[in-house]
Length: 210
Image (cartoon, rainbow, N blue to C red):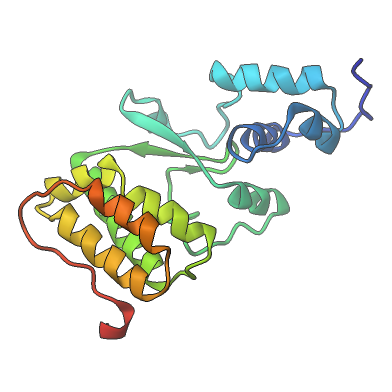
């Protein structure tokens, strides 16, 4: 039987944070109900509103350009949402600026009208950022696993192919450098076996050579 949560005044960003926690951070409905002082049924209603697009509300600062068909709404990270709630939304490591006119702090999303140029910039940024992380990250960290999964994905290969990079040679350089740093040799060999050769010749440059 569901216990009654202590009633609490919940604002709009609380509802959004609740949905983010459940969908992206592994929180349960019961845990979020307890955190925000509401019932399980109320949390379920917020999830339903989110699925229907009803949790996003138009407000005084809403830009008419955000209603265009090719504008996509991108949720901000949970830590940014919490910073906005605290009233000190400052952060550095993001492709989205809090001073960006397309940022919607009321709904904690960014409204992006994707053009070909922006898509290309983002794809190249993803590859460049991944290589930077792999160069600098500790070999026993979760970030290493996340980036290796990206580098070993078909999406990474497609980006490389689109820009004339040889994803196989790029992966080889990454795996070789990580082997030298003590990353599990067998796991890296399994990743190499799955590679398929293409043209061109971009290679990973280890940190010592920068």
